[in-house]
Image: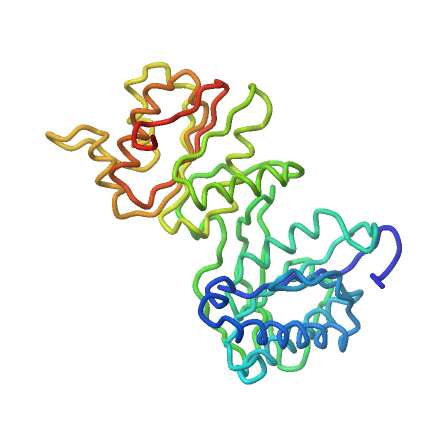
Length: 340
């Protein structure tokens, strides 16, 4: 049973396996057995520390605790258990974990509220084998830490879809890996995405569909009347897909542009590309992007359709790892000849 009734303060714990898709491809049936062992270890870690599993999430877990000390102990026990590949059918599973404290609402054996979203984002900022906790967890736990555990202050980080940054700490234990790359925050991947002042709520179906399309197509256009939230949706798509584009997600607002000839310049300015002698600016852009894997968001294309189509045609022909997401109030798709 989920602790408490109605609204209450809990410590939320999210985990998932880093690189699980790749492991399924590599290990096949071995991954199935490893995942079963992972699930058993996860349940044991939570239940032995007075926690409750809200749900298993395929390659991870969502659990809650009344006491943050118990949540810290559970995450530590899980990481120590997973440190031995023999425990998971000799498949090395690198699990990342995020903890946060907040007031949530219980409804139909599930929990809802912004703390749940924040805990998820904290987890997604971590690397496999890393446990991250929020300032709220630190404040509530105080000095009641598991034996031999310390918390390393990693500073304030800007996390996806959160209106405010979060100060995060790494759980440190002598038997666990302690050094990791930079956190997967908005700052860690090159981008110019503006920080949103509100959380993204609703439109989960459209968000999921758009991200799925961008996995298989190189150009996606969001169409709709002005004011429907296409820009906000495009920014959320970009934030959610940062991990897939190591060379960045770049937002180009075309609303102020009136001259179609300035569309390449607007893109170049965002990417920090300068004109070169002899070459056209579009050729310079292609050369700059050619070896990069990035997502380009062209917002408000409706009054510059021909110019946007021409530019996307050139860019997609010359840059194999480029994805473009466009938004438009027009009912006309941006459909360059290279996509026909």
